[in-house]
Amino acid sequence: MNPAYRRVLLKISGQSLAGEQGFGISPTAIQQTAREIAGVAALGVEVGIVCGGGNIIRGISASSEGISRATADHMGMLASVMNALALQDALERHGADTRVLSAIEINQVAEPHIRRRAMRHIEKGRIVIFAAGTGQPFFTTDTGAALRSMEIGAEVLLKGTRVDGVYDADPEKHPEARLFDRVTYADFLQQNLGVMDGTAISLCRDNKMPIVVFNMSVQGNVERVVRGEALGTRVEA
Ligand code: UDP
Image (cartoon, rainbow, N blue to C red; front, side, top):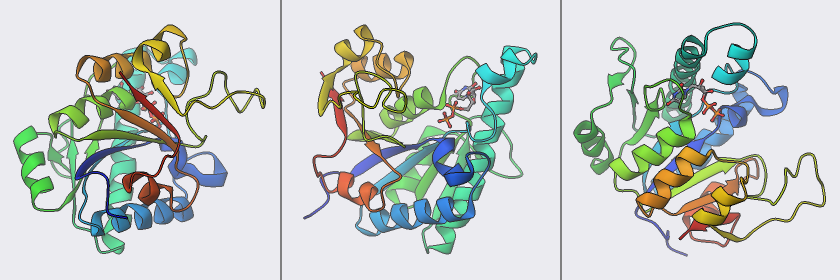
């Protein structure tokens, strides 16, 4: 089966890089992720990636422990830069050509985010890893992923998580929760469904960007979703 998409934006949560250890960067998890992404790029699909930072620090949690919210968010964005560098390294070990573009200028370690530069890299077949989310506090990397998907003209935003998709309740707390195969932006927002934040969903709704939420911890799922297999939950109009 040929790939169903020509250009995708893949959102990887920090948590999925932590693997079993639940914190930091697991060498096994990052190698497995890199292998899958390099495999998809080898099919000729153009790939942009947004890395989260929650495996290292989350602004909301850190601010509840006494750090001011904006500072904690800056720390969270820097965490996503660390993940991006680790992922770049792992991807290169799998033979992929990559660039890290950061929304916070950090020129000694990554290029600044300039949309035209990102486009040029993507058109040359490089995997572009977007780091530091939107570059602004009070946002999440999900919103950064929504924004970058539009900027690069992706056909779909692929949101990798550790559950199978969007449920009517948190499946890790409610085993009877029901998995949706499709949900509208409006229902997602109205029912306050989890997995992705409301800002990201409404940005996608306003710009007609379809989202596929799928389980990234199952080996081979990145390729399956790119090949257009009915996997996870599709969020659309
Ligand atoms: N963050 C931010 N602005 C952004 C993106 C991220 O302030 O545009 C901060 C925020 O504190 C967030 C942290 O970076 O909690 C890590 O990102 P996120 O929680 O989205 O990571 P994930 O859950 O995907 O691992």
